Image: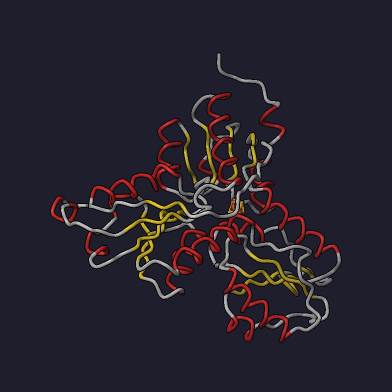
Length: 335
Ligand code: SF4
């Protein structure tokens, strides 16, 4: 923020959504990288950004983590960590082939979806995945499925189809509408997913739903909290990185409440012009955004004149995930 912008004053009040920021899966993924660095020393390779937040990734990089997109960038015998978004079966197999020592930071709630997918395939079903094309979680979940081949080894069905919108559902052609199930990405907008599920159920009345909701508790709670907060605000600021799916969904949720909303990776993206004439500014953060970044945004708003800071009440989360056993049991290699 420039000095001239920073000197613009506001008299708006601030409200903070609750819950906001880190979820149990993100907490666990960061601890896994930190413990691996602590036990084995740098460098520790991480496939993809371990969580989608620039501040977190830069911090881990400074401690000795090396983020790569492909396993062939990692020297044989090195330690690799799979990100919270999960990986395909092919990636796991490749890590083994390359002699990499792998620790898995896949969120257990993503693993739950992988297990569901495997069971659906064992039951002879094709699967429809509702998710965003190109997102690593979608690639990992779709990569749990092996294609169906005929006797000449030709692929007759990929076994899993990706849809993002009701229009995609309308285009879809499946092998057998009576042997069909669906799963969703864990960080979707609940409202958008409901529309796509509705379209699927209308087109395929016998489609099987997952046993329990795939959109995770953290996504649901954060979206509910932003909805509640946004209705009393005339500006909403979501702290999160541009590649964070759940942060983008929070931003959309606020916009859909008819409120002016922006997503900022950190305080330097805050624009004083957004505050002109505003009375109440709501602040929240995606599940991968640390609280320190929220504090910096609040403190900048206060610096600009905002006085009251109200912390809204919300669901108290007590979810904690265990660390991978192979990591906790591993001997430290540091002397
Ligand atoms: S947002 Fe949900 S699925 Fe993703 S890491 Fe957090 S708890 Fe796990």
